[in-house]
Image 1 (cartoon, helix red, strand yellow):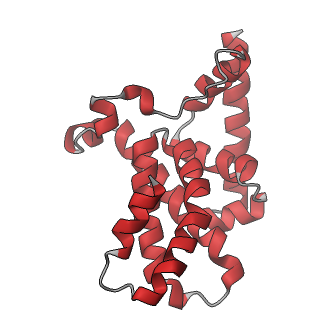
Image 2 (image 1 turned 45 degrees about the vertical axis):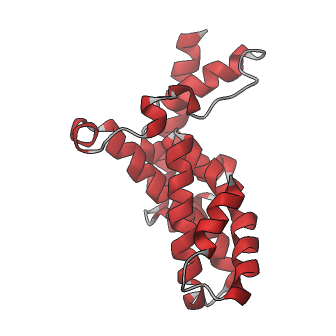
Amino acid sequence: MAGARTTEMTDDPDVAVGDRRALEAFFAEHYRRLVGLAGLVCGDVASAEDIVQTSLERAWRARATMRDDTRLRPWLDRIVVREAAREKRSRMTWLGRLIRPPTVSEIEAPAREVVDLDASRFPERLAMRQAFDGLGAAHRSVVVLVFDAGYSVDETAELLGVPRETVRSRLRAAREHLRYALREGS
C-alpha cells in the first residue's frame, strides 16, 4: 500500500526525477508511525491513511522552510495529530455527520477501524480499547502524544499549541475516565 501512495506522490510534476528516491525514503521513514498516531487519535484507519498522505505531501513541499532538521518529527506529529483530532471531532458532531459523506470504511467495512488482534486473547486489552474509544479528540491527542509517542508534557503543549496546564488537566481527566470506564467494565 505504501508503495502505491509513494507512486502517486512521485507522479507530481513538482518532484524532480532525482528527488524521487529522497521522497520515497522520506515517506517510508515516517508513514507507518504517523498512521499509527493518526489511527489512535481518529479511530479510523482509512481516515488516518488519508491524513498522513496529505500531511506528508505538504511536509515534502515545505521541507525547504525547515531550519532545524531535528524538529521534523515533532512538526509532522503535530500536523498529523491535529488533523486527526479535527477529523474525529467532525465525525462526532451531528452537523459533521450530515455534511461529511461517510468514508468507504464506514459504508463497506466498519471493521477497518483500529483493531487490536490480541484483544480476544487478552480481555483486558479489549476493555482498555473500549475505554480509550470513549475519550474525546482533545484527550486522545494528549494521551497518544505523551504515552505512545513519548513526548513530555511540555513538548506536547508546544506541539498542540496549548498551555502546559491544559495538557496536564487533559491527562488527568483522561486517566480518570479510563479508570472509571475500566472499573465499570470489570
